[in-house]
Image (cartoon, rainbow, N blue to C red; front, side):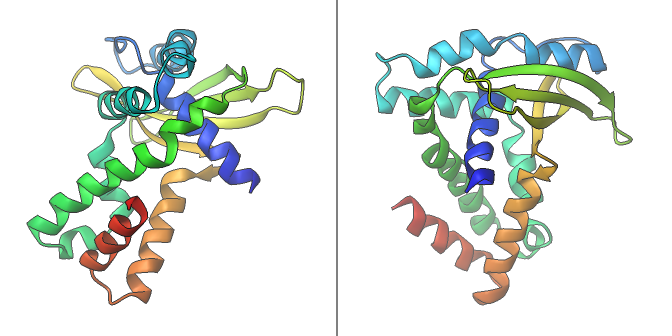
Amino acid sequence: MVFERRSVLALGLALVVGLASPVRAAGTEEAASRFIDGLASQAIEALTGAQVSPQERASRFRVLLRDHFAVETIARWVLGRHWRNASPAEQKEYLSLFEDLMVAMYADRFVNYSGEKLVVRQASLAQDGDVVVATDIQSPGGTQPFRVDWRVRERDSRYQIVDVIVDGISMGQTQRSEFASFIRQNGGTVEGLNAELRKRLN
């Protein structure tokens, strides 16, 4: 699917632009744009080199995910109201499985990186204080670029990405809808979702 392919690339670029030290500045449009724009080359090199083994790539990817994505915030939002209905043990397992799933789904995708370039178009301050950075992803072959918006949040004096919107479709919202549908159709429990995530990982 086109959306799936674009989503993979978008998430990958979101992670790689956050490889180096985070920008420590006020939560402004300009600083958020620098966060997205300034670090792609160094990060892509770290994750796409031919010398990087799959195990090392997964390890590096996990570090990026933890350091530069608000993983727990995203995971809890994706689970929605079901988070409150889960036991502490189920919540803990879900957070671990969510992170493992992101690593399993996306780390090896960098093998297929073919020179796509991210170009910042503009940044705007959202009502909730987040900054939305609008970019185009351009392919080296000159095909039509597609738009990706990055919702960036300042947290503990650094920036983290809290959502990626590909051609107007929120990846977080898409995952939230999928999980909600699965829970609704499979007993209404988070344990059922956790069992499904364990199955996917295996």
